[in-house]
Image (cartoon, rainbow, N blue to C red):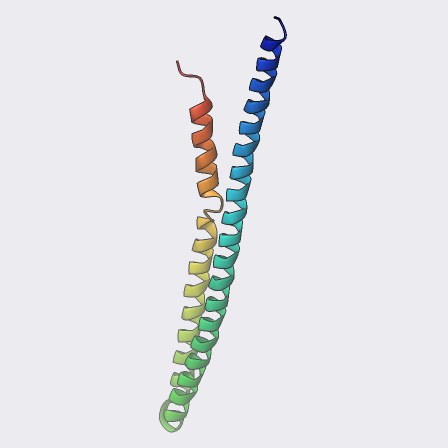
Length: 127
């Protein structure tokens, strides 16, 4: 008669361990999915940013060369000075934006961390 109680306790503990491992596995899978999404997002962002910077850079250079040639006879130094100012201002602006975005950080694993916090709250004993 004493055998069924330990067996039930053992089965209960195994079931609890299985549930815990299943929850852990789900959370790790969520981490992996979020990491893949962040990797794809960052790669696409980097590609688009470099491509945009390249085209805008070439466009600015050609525009400024055009303006310099246009004003070569009358105001070439003014044209070159304004061109330099515009390019330096654009570079400072872009650098400031990049620094702001870097300080803002990433929301990597935000959903997973929220789910884990919710799991902990659910498992916390009620008072």
